[in-house]
Image (spheres, rainbow over the protein chains, first blue to last red):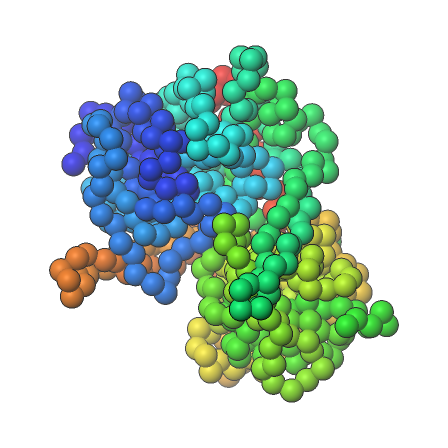
Length: 259
Length: 259
């Protein structure tokens, strides 16, 4: 299946294997290496780092469109896709995992809820250089074309130079406008939050149910943050780690617990 | 529903509202305050920080056993439960979110996959002091009793003194043995990993499917880590943050991307 001469690139996402975002990403990655796609067979947005531990997984070859890539559609979450690809489908470790291009922002705290970004984090946990890409346009018909050169450049640099151990990249791309992109900005995760509410409805049987709604609030405002970069038409790149320890808080916790 | 005199404690988990772990935790929290339970109506292990964004949520009053607590069973993920509780069910902000007691370890990188811990992280994102508790015993009949005093002491201290902004606690409790617990150890997340493989099977229709399996490997070995503490019969307490930025890697990423 694999060819030692070219880098092996695993492509996944959370919008599902048919989404235009991943179809674009596959075409572009075909330029850089041998591409194997293992992506969800249905939308998995908002799945975070969920894995399938009490159920079976299906993973079958699929053909979505012409091209040299090999493709599989998987019944699981984006993180399942990465684990299944690395440990079952592929006969060697990929040189790069790319996830996306997500339809919609994964900037700020969205990184935590995002299946697309969790796939990239899982790639880093498997010690593979990994990048998640997202476009700030939720539309199925979103225009991804303007991002092509930047996406290729970032992927090429990461293939050539690797990434620090335990770190993956969260790349967000502004929605296409009249202005060309201002460039790439390496920045930190904005400490924003979602202001949620729930719309209560009643079903035809008279029983209540809820829809979650929310509005993102940039309660941070820093000019070194990803939301700032995106507002100023930069692609934002945040290095993401999976050591969740709040090292700065260890002393405070000693004090609080008296331990 | 609420009583201003007593602290309001929201209790949730990922094993579901009927699990012995949460039934113990509810009884103990009744000692400290007014308890409202909003927990999944079915097991949600391994759901990470998943949320329900493309489907409806159900949340109905339930009675599991006698006690002063108010209880709701919710169709969503643990993170959905926290959001629904805070923004729909409760008429004031809880003073404390406790999640668990999980049946099984959430030490090391398990924190990332854990629905129990993601509920605590979501509590911190909602700016509520939050704690996730887990027992290193997967059995439904696990003995939680030995942990009671420590769990109460940690919860009492957090109620009295709060937690640093943006930080929640990941508390893991050794399995009950002949030895009393050695105490509480504040520590960092062990940088271990899961060594996964997939068992391929064939269904009665002749089609392939997979079961994920795995073995945890402590590839860290540090004596300031949660795995070390648990091995030495301490309860481990790791402060967990949701700023995933690898601040230490920002300069390296500038170099790699030439940006």
